[in-house]
Length: 245
Image (cartoon, rainbow, N blue to C red):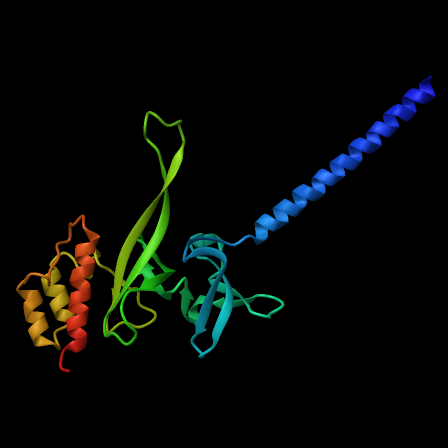
């Protein structure tokens, strides 16, 4: 009787272990697949997204692009690209990258002021909103911010994600080592009419329009409508590019 009971338990234990082994294989396969799955949150937080990397030495590398600059302090400053027909990915330092083409938008690596204390300039890939060869460039930074909910209808400690956009320019005097200027930052506001007219002073007619705060050539520091600032800046840039031609 004891022998039969022992054999019964042994048989069922073997069946249980076989099922457990199969479940572990399935779970491991799922986790491995999840680690390799492409995702896109922002241009600075994406994995295995089809695009093209342009380097400063003239290379053009189409392939699957991975980038994680939003987790800045825990990551290295490089772009990873798995080129077509390549056996393994290549890591390219951000400072060696001229730009990225992702989903039909062109991004450039720029130092930007993240608005923190002390030296808060950090590298981010920002979408260029102006044509190549423009004397002044306008860029857009898109981020996803996680915030804590204070609503009484949500459980304590719950959070939600909101999209955030900020805008930056580089001027003819900018070098690659200088941070791009926030449209709402101290380089341009307050007294936009004085600071912007100084930037385009070699185009006297345009500078005078800005100085006089003519319609379409001025925006205030405090404004809730980003579209008006963008429209104003793009208009100024377009006229500056045409100045003297």
